[in-house]
Image 1: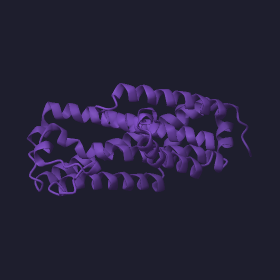
Image 2 (image 1 turned 180 degrees about the vertical axis):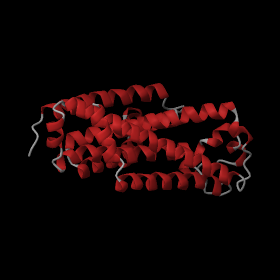
Image 3 (image 1 turned 90 degrees about the horizontal axis):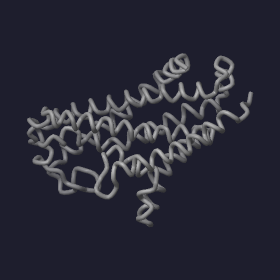
Image 4 (image 1 turned 60 degrees about the vertical axis):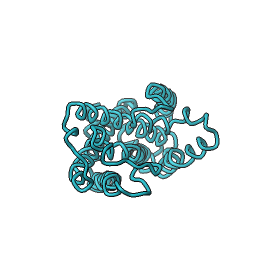
Length: 263
């Protein structure tokens, strides 16, 4: 399995994928963190849903990770696309057959690919967090935000907790993308279905029928990254997310193990 992980990491560090991911994640982190501080006095708000967060709120320990938390859900979408494409392209490019010649155990291939992509997602989250925090410090003076509380033990605990939650959320989205890649066996179809469902259809469904929101996978994945809220607890989102991923993952793994591989 270790050789499978190393081989998958070799694929993930290809310049086209690695540099493209860095550019996308870096751009999103810079954009959303900058909006928080550059539009701090804007009447239109400087946070999601038009909310306004002022210097007083950002001067607390939460201000250190505020921008990072905003970009968390988009990291999940990026992970979904990467996991889906890297899984499904083994079918579309016909490389799965060659992999099985070197490693006949399909479950070892699947586990090795998942471990490698999980490591890639962790690096992506850490990079986004470091960039977001660096930009927050750089723009704090312009926004008249006091950063004294940002170096406290409470802020460090909050940073660790937020990073862990965002990584779990990103991993859930990525695993969902990997499952779609295994089921649909087409990168374009898997990415299209995953993005369409999580960014559009779920929001429409939750808006039309409020009671469905707490049972939809994407909403619960996102809520994990936020650490939960008053309407949807962290434990509930964790339970629902695990239920979806375990059930669909078991089905995808079974199909991956039993399906014939075309030449």
